[in-house]
Image (cartoon, rainbow, N blue to C red; front, side, top):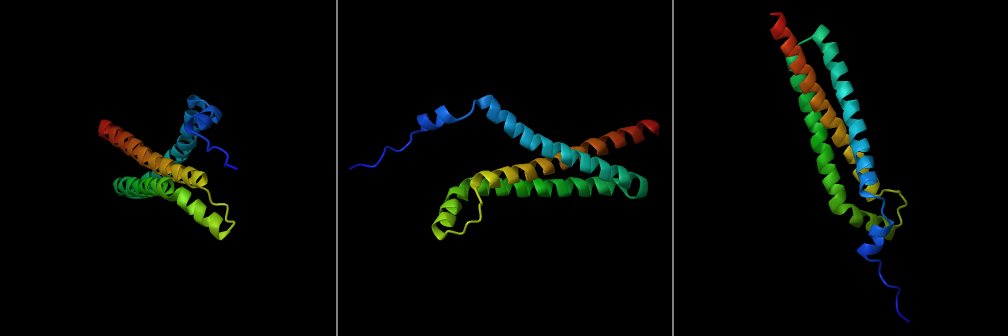
Length: 137
């Protein structure tokens, strides 16, 4: 008696959704997090424009955004590289945590997108305020 044949890449491609649908899901996943990050950065910088050192706040906000972006990028690559091994280990040890490579990649993509949005928001708000101040003076 022989084992059933292993599924091939052609079988997996036949079951996969179209490329546009997959791309739309990924863009929405990262895009919504980026918009949230840009909104948070804009609100934070608007508040510091009124009460504090604006130039320092822009630099600090950008640095915190780049920290989140880097953490998300590192975590995403780690989930891609080690995800199947961790899933196999958890199955073997019967931990029942429910951790999956897919969920880890999605979480890290959201963190990455949020950090990107904070960086872009800090850049946009800082630049526009600088241009406005230069035009007024």
